[in-house]
Image 1 (cartoon, rainbow, N blue to C red):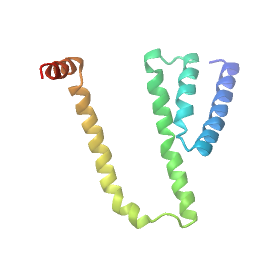
Image 2 (spheres, helix red, strand yellow; image 1 turned 45 degrees about the vertical axis):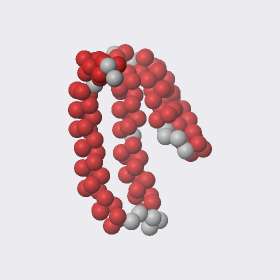
Image 3 (cartoon, one colour; image 1 turned 120 degrees about the vertical axis):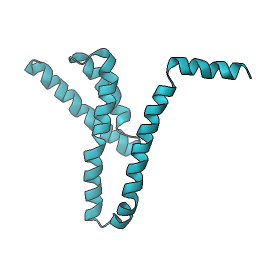
Image 4 (spheres, rainbow, N blue to C red; image 1 turned 180 degrees about the vertical axis):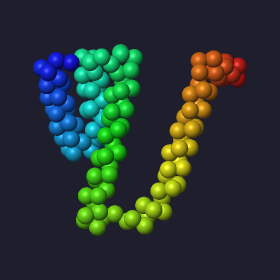
Length: 127
């Protein structure tokens, strides 16, 4: 990617960051509300295949949650606003729930294949 195009993309991403932070702060919505559509549009000017653009945009938006959450937790901890005993109590059940939900979703993907959906629709029509 030529330097001029890369600079343009960097400027768009900086503007997107400012816009998403402002919207998230003023309206309380997630920054992904702004980031995902703009990132999907910006990816049109890169080598990302069209069928993967939305996946990349959503994954990128979700990937920013981890460092942001860690930084936020430490910032709150500096103000003594984190109950670490509660965090330790809930950490394992939350992790188990996340893994369980991912496994469940994987199973739902298999169940919701087009033939399965047709069978489900037919079963409702017969009632």
